[in-house]
Amino acid sequence: MIKNARFALRGLLPGFLVERRTPPETVARVDLDRLMGTWFEVARLPNLEADGPGQQSVNVTATYAKDPDGRITVRTAAYNARARMRRSEVTGRVHPADPSGARLILRFFKLIRGDLWVIGLDLDYRWMLTGTPSRRRLWLIARAPRIEPEDYRRAMAIAIAQGYDAARVQPTLQEAPV
Image (cartoon, rainbow, N blue to C red; front, top):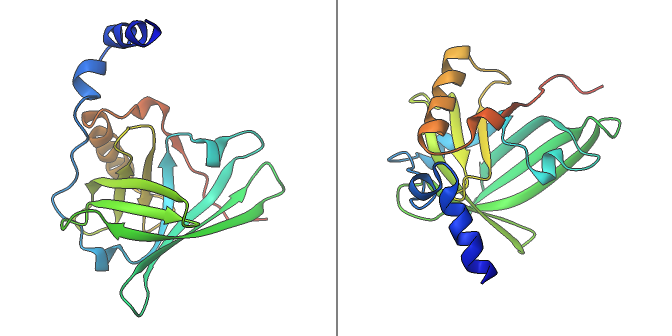
């Protein structure tokens, strides 16, 4: 009974039936070799890990590297502005979920698994827009701490077209830690 009521209520929400049933579209292909190196988080949809109680992640970076055996690792580093700029870092594995390289699987601590889809990508790999298929998480990352306003608008237009709530996206502060 309650399950049916929830389903009925969801049907009344704007955009739910159209946008949420089909997964977001990814870019056609990601050259994983060009993904390697450090990316700066420019903006994100708020999430518990970065924006939860007592947490305000700033100066966030993700560094992708290939191990000698060809496996890809990602090291994410951030500073907590609400905890005297305490640094945190986590390292995980990245596996392509399909031959395009646009759908990635991230694993942290061998227990946490997440899907990360590339939904927007600058032709020169200056910025990349990634999100989860559920559309609950979205990140705009770039090779530099800031991007041009036109590139930001383009990325947000992609997010909106893919059904993400771009109005909730918040810029990530990138400055030298104290």
